[in-house]
Image (cartoon, rainbow, N blue to C red; front, side, top):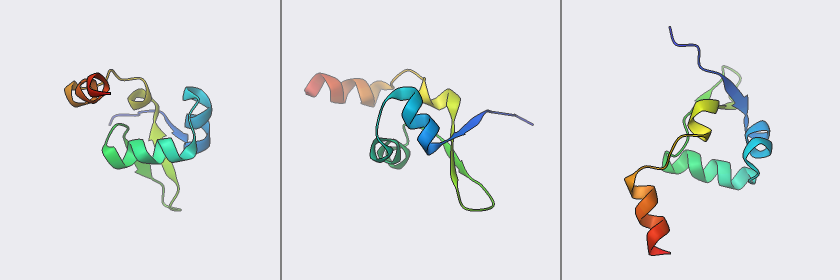
Length: 64
């Protein structure tokens, strides 16, 4: 079994310096992985907050 560390949405916001809305946008776009607890809360996998951007992420930054 893989024991990956998870954190709350608010803790993720503090760690990376973004708003709750940004975290939810990242969840919706698949940039971060998450899990829902039995109580319905969202927990973010810490290792996905710090991963390198994929090819589609780089392309969108170059277009800006």
